[in-house]
Length: 498
View 1 (tube, helix red, strand yellow):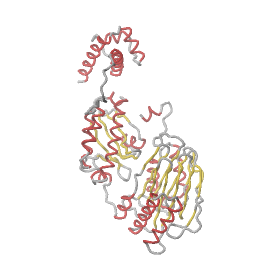
View 2: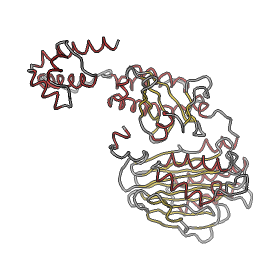
View 3: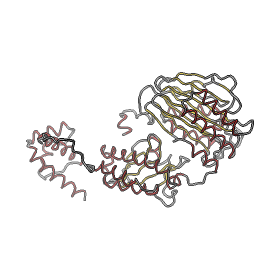
View 4: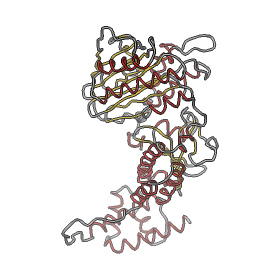
């Protein structure tokens, strides 16, 4: 089959060359200019059916001829009284995207993997969708009867590496395929396994770009469909959650989001029985607003307190109130709906995205940290007040100025107070050391948060005594690739990240 395709390509190039009106010397010079490295005699032998060329060289030769044909084509056309628009999409890429959009319009969530594969067939590839489980340890096939069958370990497989590093990665053996990150915006949802017909396709930049576009649309659809059906959520959640955990998870924003020069990523653990930890954020053209909260208790009641804090915070935020008023609204909501003495610790923060100015209030919570150039340089120690619900006392709003590429680290005491079987705390020292190592490795916020939570779990032998939450925010003073790791030495960012 490959030889038949090669023969057809040779004949088509020879026929096109007859219409291109190029001498052998002119053809070879144009071919050489475009990066061809076969000699003139080799090219001539190929065109006359007496020799062969590697696929890449055949394609460079075809492109050389096609460029000449474009020049010779008469481009002038008579004008119409109004724009003439196509009723149906042209080109396989646009057809693939439109077919996925139209077929998903009235589809249930469990049909999405098949729809993505059908769109892939328009591009002559086969696609399997994998979704990351909520523990962020395994990528699970979205179309399997049992999502645990065929799961990929995030830390030990090539598909897992594509997920961790948010990079398109080729796999040559045993079958040629591409691993494409599945994203909704900048939130990592999983990967697409794209099976191709030939190893050379794995390194085709056009196909890689097309698969990324298809993955972007598939990621948006996965998030949208999860809002009205449980099928995709069940793939990611093989174990049932408690009532309190369902309450909190139903209120949380996406784990990762970004705008231009700012990215925020958070994780709440345990995912199946979390009660009182929560986070929230709001990203706009000018400002990022952040909240981390830890409600008193370890039961459904603490979940209700945390949910009340989230609702009060959003109500104040939507009304356009600043930090001081937001804290007052949260105080009042806890006092009005729970018995005396009920409280929640937390941090409210605002970041000016143009200047890096941070304003914050700390309500009895562990002090946020600033990480700069791979090192934790200071805590945000100002802006202190009593926990929410216990009165605000004298309130002072803290202030700090970020430098480009600084990180803000917000966390609950379930991180630092996690204890192992010997009673040893995870502690701020381990937290700072882990953040330093992750920064040195170039991991972006979502991957750093994933690794941090797994380190806390390992310290407690996977049995948390308290909820643990971390929120990482990274700011720069210009638009940048804030999600992906830096490129490897000797390679450009485009080569490394595709």
